[in-house]
Image (cartoon, rainbow, N blue to C red):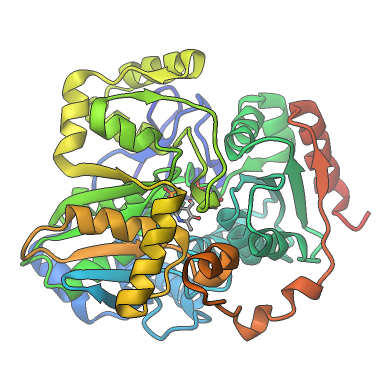
Length: 467
Ligand SMILES: Cc1ncc(COP(=O)(O)O)c(C=O)c1O
Ligand SMILES: N[C@@H](CCOP(=O)(O)O)C(=O)O
């Protein structure tokens, strides 16, 4: 399988190349040159596989020519060995016809572990093979950072610098990142929003000299490997409800558009998906787009669901590329103008096509709290604020006879304040994190200034944080 950039300029590469490269050199996002498709019989044959076997089977065509399926299966077995549920991602019926696909049974209690645990093993594998060392820089609104730090802590093949927006994550999220002691991990709190952090990461990639000097790599969902590793759980859930002989719909609380894009990718691979319903908080750029083709950036506002406090949804570019029939020149033009004006001009026909599959629902903080309270009162389902938004979107998009599967993206214990306020229940952290609030924290606070951040990343690469 070869990959090309949504903006066309970068040379085509294989899976291992794009795993390490992260973002394409022209600023675009890598996409597979073609969509691998499974036949109905091939889907059916996956019904009996364990989660790691199924994940390897689904990811294998994306890694073709770079990593063989036996190796992938071994890496997947290692990646999912320590999840605290035997099904890895169990399904729970929340109400009639609506199911939560719980993606938070990994080490850091959010869906990011589902891909990041595998990425940890993929990076080790490829870097060992090549004898290389890279620097990962990541932007986080709380969950990607903790998952990446957990997956890469202690590795000799890479140093990791994670940028989070100061004061805009939950305390649990921040402490999961800043209490890690391994010397290859650096946390930087930025005076700004998640979008500022993400802009900084992209600016570091655009700085060729810096990029080459530190061998820059990415583990945000701008990295295609993240999306590929998020497809299997949608496949597994759909198979459990009778796919490919019966369609399903998915609802996904959405910020950077990576998770729902993975569900859409599954549909491109031949999985029968009826609808994709996205849920947003007050940072509702995506739901405004779906409702009225208004993709205009506003100020990022803090909300009860801080992981989705995002305005510029990086992965939307991948969908746009498809909606524009893979015309990379047109895609590059739209993205360049968006960057300049803060307003994306999506051609009317492309917008209509998006609406054929996607719908959106926005919940403000009061509505999110009310949804959490309702779920607990009705069926004792304790949802974190992100999942609650997804469930509300799923309920709105549900059709008779089509199971609605909602991505439950975080454990309620990651957002205890919001959960207690809505339900009166204080969800405990699992025993391995019970002393999280007694551990000491370590992070640097920096202004939103590329030179200062590059200097910190460079120094950390050379000396580690125990310098
Ligand atoms: C708990 C949680 N829910 C939902 C989202 C939104 O997912 P995505 O950014 O893939 O759209 C995030 C952040 O990515 C998250 O951490
Ligand atoms: N919500 C995310 C934001 C980054 O998303 P990613 O999927 O692109 O890594 C977070 O928690 O950090």
